[in-house]
Length: 281
Image (cartoon, rainbow, N blue to C red; front, side, top):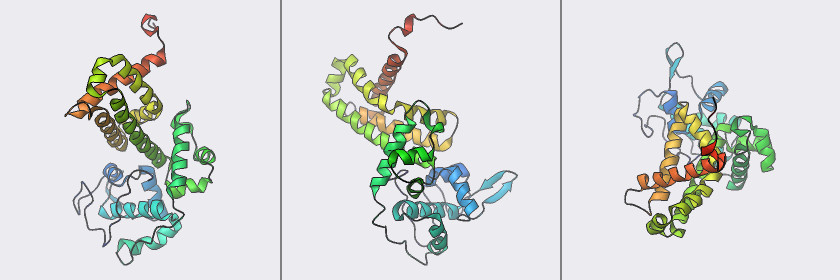
């Protein structure tokens, strides 16, 4: 599913609190993004289109949002991702859905996961290339996936949302590979018996994910709140996958394996004689 698990659409009006918030409590933009999974640029785009009401201006340049905005974003995601509706169609039906006057329309048969998977696979390939995420265009992603550019926006509201889908898909795939590797290496005894082999095996597994994980880590390090939330979830998922077969406390055990794998990949990247090279003046 695109952009992570879709929040369940709520019927009966916007006065119910979302996860991590209380009804009537003001919501900052960062918190709104974290709760809804919708990037800030897309929130502003929806505001400009009239899909969202204007937030409250509490002081110059400082806006706060409400449960109305969160509920609307959840409905918009549901309609775009599960019903394949365009923003014009959504604008026409959203007021009645917000008021609970009409149920959600049924999912359309052509809203299959197959185009989404092709788009995620294409984006993963392009984002992993040396030019990186910032230089990749939506048109390039569409061309690589073999779909029209408009199809990208049918499934993902922005390139940022597609990046999030790539991260989540990669996280799930890598976690499964980690768990399988632990079993194939012979569990705790096997990993302890041949740590060099363990480092090589996990290094090869993490190499595929490194460009995406480094992009996510850089965003988190720059203070991007949604990236920090996503990075923490990814790290915990990978650590638990690697550490669950090894210990009753899987996160520390898994982090040790992951740290060794990262160090191994970095050594591969800089070459075998990195320790002998003179430092730059």
